[in-house]
Amino acid sequence: MNKNISIRLFCEDTLGVGGEIILEKDQTHYLKNVMRCKINDRVIVFDNTTGEYVAKIINIHKKFVNIQILEKTKPRYVPGDVWLIFCPLKKTRTDFLIEKCTELGLRKFLPTLSDKTQTKKISVDRLKKNIVEAVEQCGGTFIPEITPVSPLSKVIEELPEDRMIIFCDESLENKNISESLLSVNSEKVTLLVGPEGGFSDSERNLLRTKRNVLPVSLGNRILRAETAAVIALTMWHGLVGDWHKRVDHQNYES
Ligand code: SAH
Image 1: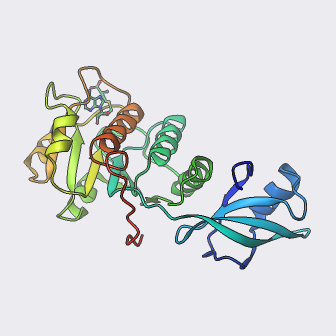
Image 2: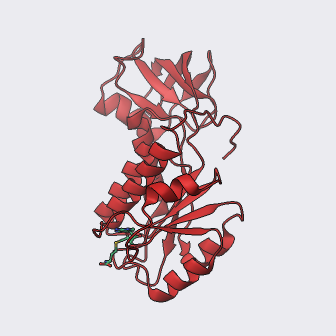
């Protein structure tokens, strides 16, 4: 039924069949003025708790639109437990990294400032909007978190003990990521990708002394940071993550 419904929106409210929702300002403008929706038109809505639904527009007011939830179309699917520590890049490259990694599926973005990070400031709120748009577009039902920007040493220090760090180290010649990922016996993995300038020697030395850090190579060419993030996440999904065994992590509470 919902294959030909092109509009898909994230709702902060927890949804349920029969419920009525008042959409917020931006979504009202989008439905009314951009998509020129009419009463009785169908839209797809999802929350970050129960899943996705077909809804019907029941009222279009000057400042808001009312919808009624008709039927559930799919439950919330939580991706495997992979996080990504990345360094802010130039705006378009950061946007690419956020969008593609959200489409691929991960649980958390951890933006970090390393010694050679050139872009020191990012708007986490703007990236949150990008994340929601990417989930709306790709049919996902889980909204990955993004944490405030924090220094690399602090992020590493505060990581839970049971999380393996897959350290994408451009200076490594061998130890390709496939064997490394398959050797990891922890379900909880954090991918780490550096900035345009790469990691400093002191960072590399710090990371290599940590027992839960696994340095890996992504091949013998130097990839752009955003390319490296996408490749590392793709390899994780292909080898040990969501594409490897389709497991719903329904018990996950973000
Ligand atoms: N400007 C640096 C490279 C930085 S690439 C230089 O020329 O040395 C940005 C980040 O992407 C790196 O810090 C690393 O985390 C990742 N990366 C890029 N190519 C990689 C590779 N071949 N193997 C592992 N990680 C890589």
